[in-house]
Length: 135
Image (cartoon, rainbow, N blue to C red; front, side):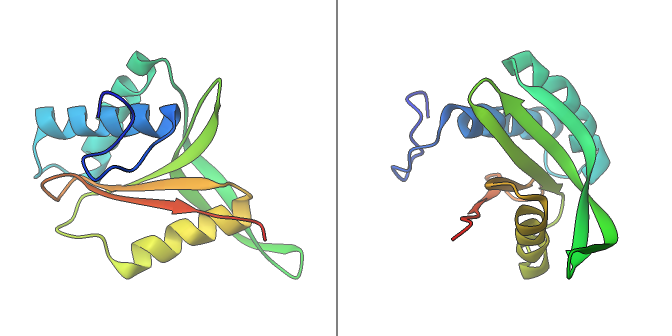
């Protein structure tokens, strides 16, 4: 993926490419059988090494009729000079439909455009790239 393209030919912008590279590196070094928090701690080291800014456990307000009824926390908000994305991590045998729904909720309610859902329990690394359009 040195040119920004995946093995399947998908073009990833620089930020997604850098984040996924860090995730792959973390999985290579830790393997597939750690706890989710272990991968998150490793990502706190790996992402800044790639000149990425990170915020951990960022609260996303969840509103009904314009009133905040609760808040949820996304694992990471990652940014560089080109933009930002959400990074949600998992450590299980497969990405579940509720994991996808969780990310879509974060995108809609938080006003973000892109979320990478990464599962360290899969080999190769499980990745879902979710995009929210406001239309």
